[in-house]
Image (cartoon, rainbow, N blue to C red; front, side, top):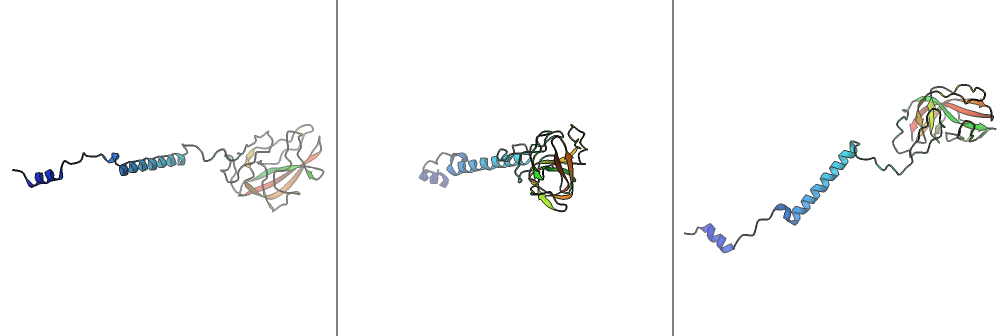
Length: 197
């Protein structure tokens, strides 16, 4: 004797074969979206942790910090990028080489290696109490260089860090150091790192 269920099934005909969720279009789209979201989340997590690459490393030039005996000139750097590793904190004080003057003009000289014309954005001599943008990278020194021994370059003190064109400095004092062979004047300023542009 046939039951009502079997009679209903007989009237509807055979049931269609069972389909897995991944074989349907909506199932495929859901799976694909899940894979994309998971991949994006993994990439974001790896970048945040510093494991995966740096953001846009080749679009701007970077700072090349000079060593104690090297020229104080550095390559220009994008002010919006991260500061160099040895960048000083805001408020750091010390002496910086401002530039070389010959007959009251900023000049680039090559007496003891390349001495850039100037490192601050100025026309005349720096003025105490004024704030200036840094034009070229320069080391902050603990003390002024020693007096020049004839035929030798003045000795530099240790660097407290490097500032570059991403910084502004406030001038606290200005000193001139007369050098010979050839005759020229180094201008140095005692500064306070005032801001990052």
